Length: 474
Ligand SMILES: [Fe+2]
Ligand SMILES: [Fe+2]
Image (cartoon, rainbow, N blue to C red; front, side, top):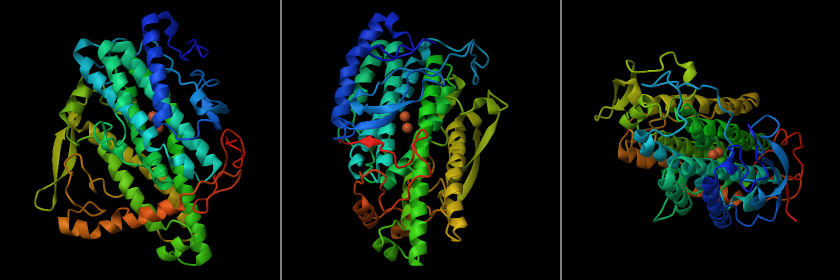
């Protein structure tokens, strides 16, 4: 597949052969840049950042490294290579030829799915826009900006689909993707997690670990779509997304590593003493984890959902790695949900599998989240400490689905509203925690230096040493 990297909009979709589409996207391009300058990373646009840029989707071209000023990053349109004669892998049309165009009857639903995904991409850039000032090192600063430019590219990916396949409605949606803003009182982003401020780096690592991982599962579900251009777009986005989760995984690991070092130095894990020494105590890290994990779980939608059932039936949105399942119709199976019984207990209910798709995907997301926990806990174990990080029950602090607004403890046991109110300072970041974490956030911009609350990375980026000058500020 030809990559037209030197076009005004780099692409591998032969954009030059469709003048109308090309012109429409060239019209959107300055609006995008305008948005980037207004709501993208503040103040670092003149810095040279050691970034990875996709020039094409093959192994040689997808990860090209070099110093780039962020506004000069080449935001392009790249779809994974087409699969010859791709067939629909699930739902009522299983085995039929995948669609190259949008079927009329699924037009508005597919558009909504694409807009909802697309909305999260610029939202996270907006959420993270001030973080550069408090980066713990040049290495981290570079990773933040890498994530930011790629989320910008993911927005391009969705806008391309809207422009190319949804006509005028699609172009209007593309405009609105730049008009809604994270946390805006009048025009907020669509999903609530993407309106939460990210004002410290512990939250950033939690977000890239838990919320970008929701992104991974959404993209994997959409990569199964019968609408082939959507599938190919998402497949390429997933290769970039992997780095975002790496930033979260290693970021949280490095915070815990540093915390363990300070626990050893002081001979105590007392939070007050830990804070005096400038480290983040384990209970605070756990509370941040509880917050972002529970918030990210809501992104999967209701546990019993007729929308999810019809997305599956119609082949719009599938299960991640559908080929691993035996029954691609899922028409006869059932799934057991554990629901609040309304009397302070839990009851089980069987629902049709198709209606449980959100829950099925959420369950595999939870299993994926556990992998990082294993790595972080290994650090504690190897240091001889009995403490362990853990995921709270998926029932805890939910605002979507059957457990929405039902107070539970971390094990998912229903409790009274009073008990929840009394104990939430144990479970969720307090104002004091946030103020303390914020007080640690001071930019460290000297080559090879690292803030005191986080350990240096094990290795650098793209074979460069970890003390490489990843961002040239002057
Ligand atoms: Fe993304
Ligand atoms: Fe991401």
